[in-house]
Image (cartoon, rainbow, N blue to C red):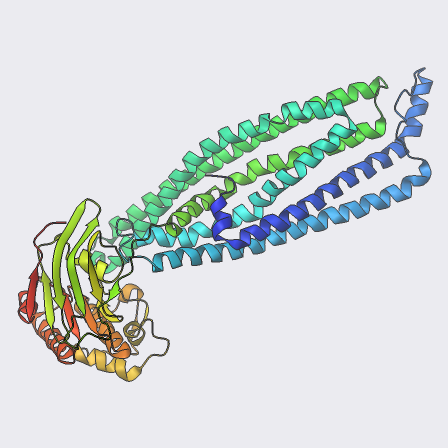
Length: 553
């Protein structure tokens, strides 16, 4: 968990603006702080020096170096006016930095979400098969929203630490080398404490984040199975389960807050001791008359300002750890390895109309520890080919290679420029049936939607019918037929040369399956190449040719 991950600058241009302008505002604010401290120190010196000098002389002492660098009484109005101007500049620059950080947070979150979604969109749908959609939704939703604390609280203080602290320590060194030397010696103690505290915070924060994701999983499982739970009257146990996991998340959150408060106390204590050490040395020299009063007051006013940014960084760090943890997972999504490889088109201007639309030539795919192939087969226009084999034989892996989602490790394959595809899951979204059928089409052709629904036996389903999340409102068989209708719509809309179906009838009854088989035959008669994966005997028997894949992945 880095305070500033370089990948944030790489994937979110808004972060560069925040750092660039934030650094400028930080320098302006620091110069205003130095000017304010100098003017206030000189104004106080002008006011108290006459009375202090009389007291010292009445006691038989000497002024020593107390009056060095002191202004005259006539300079008091100018000093006060300059202090007010410095205060206004300091406030304005601080306000500008806060506004910049807030607006930058909005832009950065939008850019990171867009980059992550683009990354997922350009990769295989099963890239995250080992994970969960809940994790992605939690990271891109609640997780990235936690970056508000990072940008509004932590990042401005981090900028001030890098911009202000060196200038303030340099000012102390120039005003009083001894005090500056003490600051240089004791200052590194605070970063050491911050590192140790950061290590402790990382552990408890990761446990809290994992508990939040587990809670999200549980809640989604309950929502998806709510109907079944109600039927079997098991909803009460799930309520107890959610309550228990919510309590665990609350406990994790309290652990994070406990570490936050304790670390804040430690950082404040270290900063206070450092300031006190310098204050004692300055006060001792002032009493003995070995130090200028104006410089002494300037150092004492400036010293807390030098420690404020780094102490604020330690305090604000805890408020941003959740966002940083989520950002790391967003970067992992953006940097997912690319699996897709270019696939050659199957046609050339010299080839005849009977040339195969889909062809595998000694094709081999390696996915994890499993190897599929080598295998060779082709699908010609007007032909239905069934790809069959036991579960795990690699049928879906070959389809993923055909779609360009994974690369062949050996051999070659060719496909048409356009094809329509039906996956194992319907993949329906919240919205109307027509919107799901015409998914991805800028302008929905309602007549074509109706034709596609009628073709798969959904004459009674209106295109305007609204569906819930993940197609709620339809049975499993209806959802699968809507997915097939979507592929038909895409094939007709784009005049696709091939139709690829992965287990298209797994949730259908015999009558609906026969209807789908007739539709596929009609598509083949129309000149399309049809490749389907199926375990259903009736659908396999409707194919012109069967390709058996017997090697396990």
